[in-house]
Amino acid sequence: MSDTSKFDAASLAEAIEYPIGLRFEVVFDAFAVVLTTLRGGEIHFHIDEGPYARSETVKMVATVIRPGVFLVSWIEASGATVVHIEDFARGMVHSHATLPDGAFLRMVGPIRIASTGVAK
Image 1 (tube, rainbow, N blue to C red):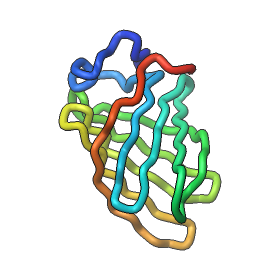
Image 2: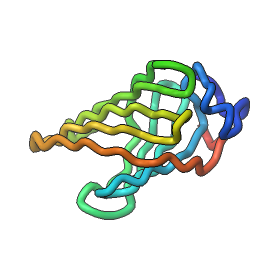
Image 3: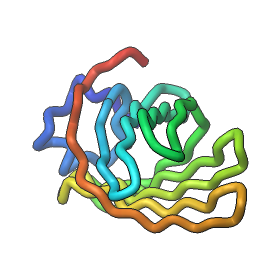
């Protein structure tokens, strides 16, 4: 994992280490989420509105697929599981989530970089 103070938006597309200290928003059809990548293999997510509204910091695993593309997964306190393909090269997130009630969500949304080098 790499500290984003070394990155600008263009270089995220070429990153081969998951960026740390990056805050980005993804707008799906059902909701928008702000994600913040943290040290220690953690990511914080915040959903403002709707049936999925909540904030949590979770342990995650990120694997580079190719430069600028990462497979990221985590388990939430509720038991929900989330798997993302975070494609900084194309500016898209593909998200699959299994909710505690067994519902399965498949979502795609654009990435908007909010800031780099946020508190870690």
